[in-house]
Length: 228
Image (cartoon, rainbow, N blue to C red; front, side, top):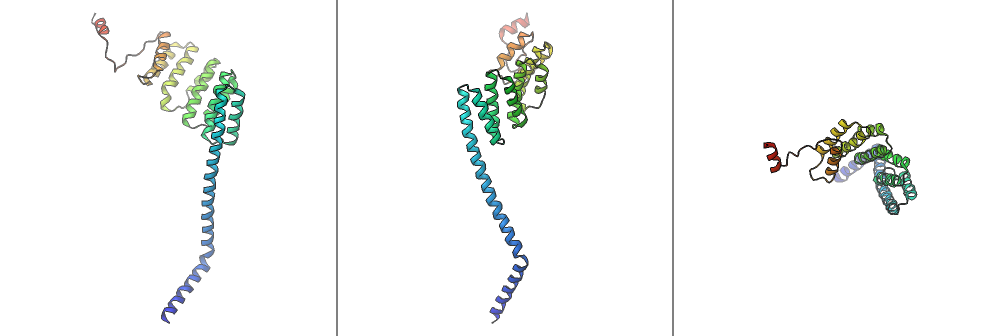
């Protein structure tokens, strides 16, 4: 009987607890299960969107190889409208800018690059702004190009930014500033960079002197010249 009495007390305690907190527990469980189901649905939805965006981007690449600017622009617009938060949207904008530029549609090229510069991640923003400055340089919109180049870039683009600044400053006939920009570009470049030689040629073409490489020992001919 003592055991039955103890069991009845536990049952009564549970009934009292459930009467007080049962509804709260049920709603917490419902919300937890609903959140879990919603999270799984969102993940599945995002995965499906990524697959769809990838398929559209593949189609864009095919049109890009065919130099079909109109189709590239249309597909890039579709990707942006349907999957704006996808990385494929940024990639599509850069690709669309390239085909527009090659088709001499500079207005569309600038619009695509400006969108990527405003909406991409930091790397895509840097790439888009560099290319936008190049289009503005071709249009001889030098002040606008410099304004873009004076914006924020990731550190790994320092050499390219200074190289492009040098080009713009040459266009403005500001040769002293252009020489300084090219020297800064060389200083930021890896010694083995294939772009280094082109920057050196541009620097020397405007009367600049290529800085000596501190890691390169002087040649015997240079030593004899210095001794003389």
